[in-house]
Image (tube, rainbow, N blue to C red; front, side, top):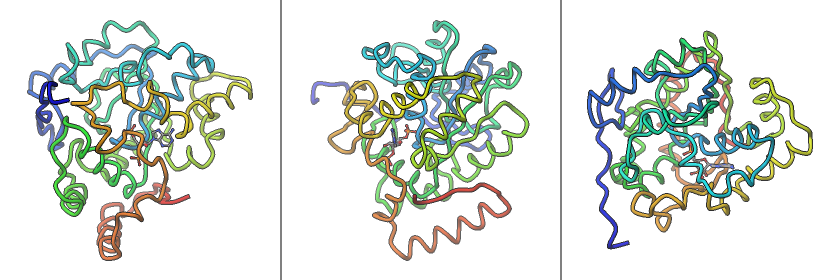
Length: 296
Ligand code: A3P
């Protein structure tokens, strides 16, 4: 480890007030002008909402449940993130995306109002996964601890404040989930919840199949559920992100697939913190019809 290059956290650029991990205005212009293809499938999330999980489910669906196909390629390397240039890769993911044959699966954490317009214009299908704020916050805190891509989270209390005020990469969780919720009525967006997938993966996989206009046998669906369970994914080196260099993700600090359990926030929130969070949440989410649950 000591011989590995030290990585400095990614630069933050404020785009329309949203802190994004983008090194320059030029890079943002390229991202915004990204040319989508009509058969691109986009996985959109606020960070730590189950992106990797959905990516794995989609790969399995696209390949009719054949997990062998991906034995050699890590999830991280299969689906370019539209807006990120990782320091350990030779080129920005945006350029890698150009070389991938259709149908592509692309990933993004951008809020809906910053999505490259070509994605809307091409009417690409988008699957958005939302996760309750409290678990998302806990997961994001641990992710900040273990990745050199993001700045040190400081204390848990400090990080809570930053999350609540939207001063973290990709900005406000509240605006993100609401923005995409509103967008779903105007575009081809399937809006799913992390907790629902955990509670009843079969039901949510059927929704995905419907949305993709695809059918699979019950046997294959059961196979997909097994292969994408937390237990299996956390042991699979292609999905647990241990293939990412350890100077980027340090799994000795915290695992990428850490708990995978709704309700883990209860181990972190004090009573006082919870009251403050709930009060702030009510204000931020006033009028929103989003049906979140914080435990199952
Ligand atoms: P925790 O830190 O709470 O464990 P993302 O992929 O968007 O970065 O999200 C990562 C979060 O999703 C982590 O949450 C991770 O454990 C969880 N996750 C990944 N795969 C999962 C699965 N198969 N089942 C449940 N949770 C999963």
